[in-house]
Structure formats: structure tokens, C-alpha cells
Amino acid sequence: MYVACSTQCFARLPLERALRLMAELEFSKVDVAIHESGSHLKPSEVARDVAEAALRIRIGPSLSPAAFSVEFDVQSDDEYLHQLKAICKLARMTAVTLLCIPASATGVGLDAEVQRLRPLVQMVETEGLVLTVPTRIGTLTELPSTARDLCERVPGLGLTLDPSHYINGPHQGGAYDELFPYIRHVHLRDTGKAPGKLQVRVGQGEVEYGRIISQLQRQRYDRLLSVALYDVAEAPFAMETEVRKLKYLLESLV
Image 1 (cartoon, rainbow, N blue to C red):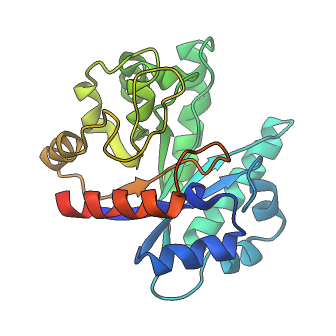
Image 2 (tube, one colour):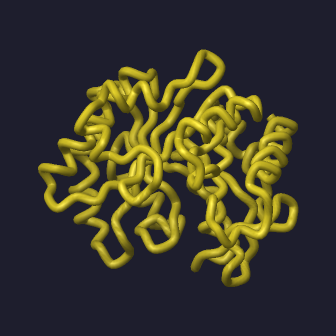
């Protein structure tokens, strides 16, 4: 397993400064958040100039992109596919092997989501990439049973496990062992069950890092564990300090 850092951790810094800070923290791999609503790289920017996007996310041999977590904001299916294809091209140029896109919102029928995701998985696979959806509150994956059903019905689809959303969301800390065979990517921060505690200081929450890693090892998981804190103004701690703490904790467990 490889401990990576998500660019979400330093979203309030310019992208170049965020990447340099990750290198200073001795990360070797970066999980690049490509969000249209974000402050760093956007899908629309990638679609306009893939080569320029590739230059922006590489700062030297010590830090390399390893996954893309993508959120679109488009007006048509054609534009969605156009931007997704551009991001696949960017992945090939930068040796990234995994893309993560959100599942549809709760309330969308499972059959409709299966029909949406099947051609996307096929397209991404033809580019030599793995497509995942994150376990996230407010989407069809907010309950483990539905996330499992989605993976069973869409061959090749994987999950980005974000246990915070199973602790703080409607699942309220219940088991999700059934999902480990489908996990291809992991996002981590510490979390409590109480409202407003989706992100707390490392060590003050209920994420069982050791148990998660043990379960992954049983599945011969050899991919990323991404430190993925949310860099928000109301965060009650110094982001750099918490990122470093979680990095050292994960490295001690793998």
C-alpha cells in the first residue's frame, strides 16, 4: 500500500504551492482533486488544454500523480463525455491508473445508475484505467448494501472507500465488511458520529485505521491510502500538522 496526499488537503493554497508542500512533507504520490467547483485544476480546464494540465500537476521526480478524484459541472451528456475523455488522456500522459467520480444522488433509481455507469466503465477500461465511485453521504453509495449492489451489477466498477461517510452518515458506524472485495482506492480523515463531526483531529474520532488496513491486506490490496482532509476555513486545527500526523500514522500501519 502507498500513502498519498489529496490536493483537497491544501485547497486554499495555489496548486503549485500545495504540491510543493506535499513534497516537503515527504509524500511521493498525490491524489489530484479535479473539481469544477474547486480552486485548483478543473475538468473544463483539462478539456481545453490537456498538455498544460499535465504540466501543472507535475513538479519533479519526487512527487507524482497516482489518482484523479473528479467532479463535473456540465449541462449535457456530450460535454460530460468530452471532459471525461480529456481526463483519461491526462491520466495516460501522467501514468495515473485510477479515476474516481461521484455516484448519482440518492433518489436516483439503481437501474438508471447501472445504465449510466456501465458505458463509462467500459470507456475508462479501454484507456487502461480503473473507474471507482466514492462511498459518500447523499449519493447511492451512502449505504453499503447499495454500494455493493452497484458494483455487482456494473462489472469492473470499483469503490473509493471513504469511511467517514459511513461513520457520520445514515449508516452511523455500522459494518461495511461486504465492500472490501470492491475497494480500489481509499480516502481517510478522522471522524465522529455527532452532527458536524465529519472531520475531527486525528485520534479524536472513530475511524479504525488498523482494522481497515487489515481488511484490505486480506484482499491483497496494493493501492493508495490517501490522506484526504477537507481544507475548510472552519477547520479547528492546522491543516499541515494534521496531514503530517495522519501520514505518520498510516505509514506505521503499513
